[in-house]
Length: 236
Image (cartoon, rainbow, N blue to C red):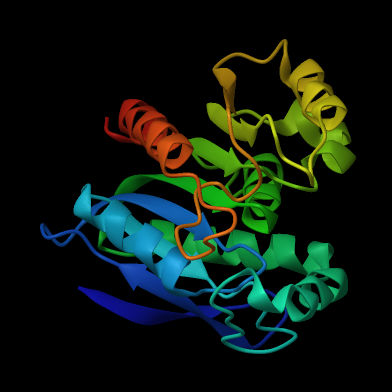
C-alpha cells in the first residue's frame, strides 16, 4: 500500500512525497526526512517499516527544487550528494516541510497525531520541523532526529523545541564530534520530554543500504527505542 503524493509548495509548484500506508488503511502520521542520498531504497524502506507498525508514513522529496527524484543508493557517490546539500535552501526547506506536515495532517489516512523522523541531513530537517513547522498554530507531536549533522549550528532554535524529542547519536561519529553532541545536550538539558540517546557506532549507523556505515546492533537498538517513543507519544 504505497504511492507518491503530490504536495503543493508554499511559493508555487508541487513536489512528490513517498507514502506508505498501514494494513488498516490509516494510522498516526510520521514524516520521514531523507539523508543526502534522496528518497532511496533505505528511506522508502523506513516508511514501509513504519507502515508495518501501523503508521501512515510520508517522505517528501526535499531536493525537488534542485533535481526532482534525486536518488543515490549508498555512499559510493558522496560527492554528488554533498553538492546537493550545499545547494539546499534551508529557508525554502522549512516551507516545504510545513507544507508536507499540513498535507499529511489533512489526509484521511492520518488519524490526527503526527511525528517526524529523519537521518543525517534528515535529522537536521526533523529538528527544523520540530522547531519551526506550525499548522494552525500547532507543531508536530514527537520528533526523532538521527545524527543530525547540522543541529549544533541551529541551537538558537532550541527554545522552540516544544514536542517530545529523542535524539540519536553515534559516539564514534567522525562527522559529528563529541563536543558538538555535548553542545546539543547542553542546549536541550532543561527541556521536558527530551532525551539524547548515545550508541556505540559511527555515522549513518541505521542505513542498511550503506555497508561501510551500517551497524546492525546499533540500528536495532535505536529502532526499538524509536518505536517505543513514537508509540508513547503518537498513539493516543
